Image (tube, rainbow, N blue to C red; front, side, top):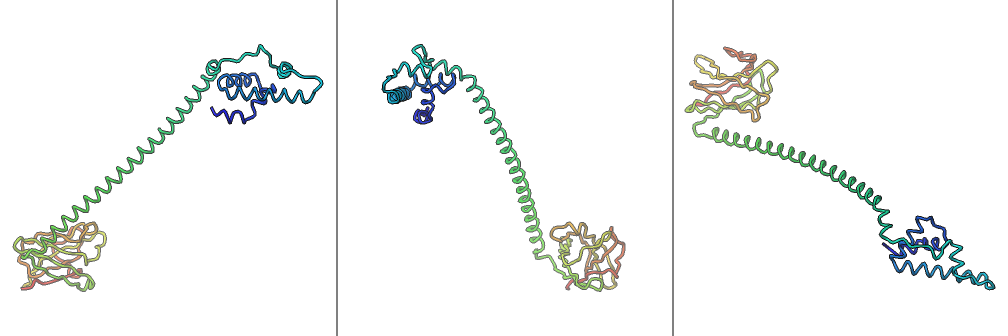
Length: 264
């Protein structure tokens, strides 16, 4: 207890003056029994009151007993032991402690839920990042493998230039005749309209004989625009036409987008 603050509050003057409630009087009395400085302050206030009384009526000295009677104090006034007062406050202290405990538990419960939510969000973000890294790693591995394939010494590169149907179009064919593999880099081709597919043709020139090598399927979703096809033909040229979805048995030369010959 901060006895200095308690003394400075003015409650002891009201106690001596008899202006406190019974409950407050008992409380001050208990504190006086517990804290000597409070008891001393009460005595000093009583002495000051007595001195003022004597000064106010010099011809009628007023004893301290009279002063005590005027403030409704007597010799029979008993000071209640402190432990009894403490017992009075125990229920209130218990309720206050319980309320504080519940408030604390509620706070930590909310904090715990927020922490769980933050952890879950972080785990989701980490998982998404791991998937992105795995996807990038897989894409890098595929790209590396593709580059190694295209750089093989047995691969012939055939530029395919734009034709009347699409003068601005271009593509490249990478043909490994030994492995009978054909790779088409189609990044220079526009996206085909709905219901249409690009079809690759192997050509012999004399006489002109087209043989279908395959379709550039999933053109819109392919990441690098490079398509792998099998080509067991003795090719002299390659062309790409735009055909109805699923392909055609023979090329529509009016929709020939790119064409290129194999260097001899």
